[in-house]
Length: 129
Image 1 (cartoon, rainbow, N blue to C red):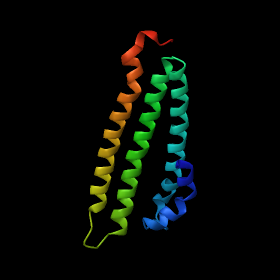
Image 2: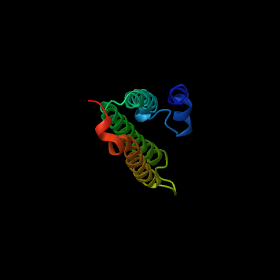
Image 3: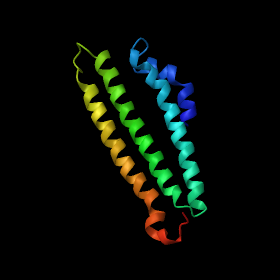
């Protein structure tokens, strides 16, 4: 789905009011980061399916990259919202949006990290190096 997000990035820029904002480039970069971390996560799953311990660490890396990208994305969208709402009643709502996005990214990263760690916790001795 991140691939389709890249194709729709121009429409997203218009939706968020970032058509002339210098931060709009991030709306094209974020789907690429998400797609790359998804591919790496599939690779980690393949390694784990073959009982390779390295799959856990590759999975942790994919979760970390995705969480970092989501946190940056929340910050950028919050900044875009603040700049487009400058001088209106809803001024400052971008910071609230960014904070909520970063919180959700952190919770998601912890949950996904625990799921990735399960093979290591359950049968860590059976995994090959």
